Length: 242
Image (cartoon, rainbow, N blue to C red; front, side):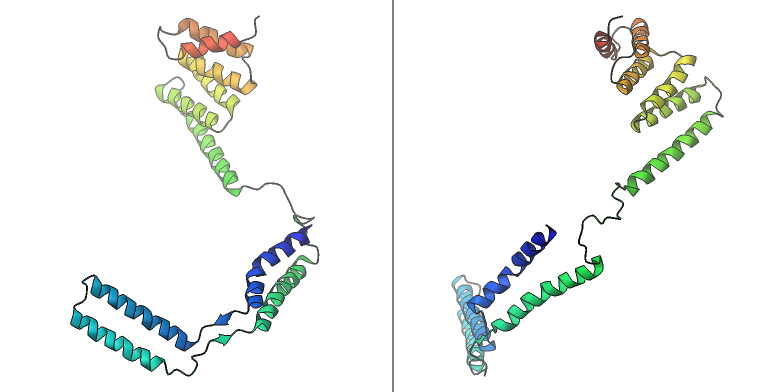
């Protein structure tokens, strides 16, 4: 199958060369190139004069100089256009793909398979692995610092709150809920309790009995107008009846 693709690519890549050789392209001689250049210069001088960018005397002098060069270049010996040979073009068109395929077969050992039989096709993402390793180190350092902070202090509460947010951002929902539960055991907060119930529900894909308990207490102890009340009521409405 792969040889069909190789052949198609070769044909597409070399089609312009074959077309050029078939039509018998020609190479412009030095005289033709020089004459075309000088004619273009004369046309540009006339346009500059018509648009007022050159004075008549300046135009006459410049035109005379270009005409002098035109006469001098008309005496070039290779004025006739040379016909390009088709044979070198065809030879290159055949040799280039032949050499490329030969080198490919030599390197691949004659088995152009993709992927190779002995290749490890497991997805590798070094950048993601390095980022996860850094996150693991950061979480371990945060836990170590929390062990040194007096339990129940403001910094202790903020530290476990941050730990829960970090674990949640990494997709570790259970670890995030566990971190916030530690705070609730020392200092109850109805908004945080609603977050724990939400994370537990997200981790399970449904409102579990444990999540429902957090939702019920949060609703019972939340001040009127709390922004999480609507979500809590919605989650309690989707919970299975007991």
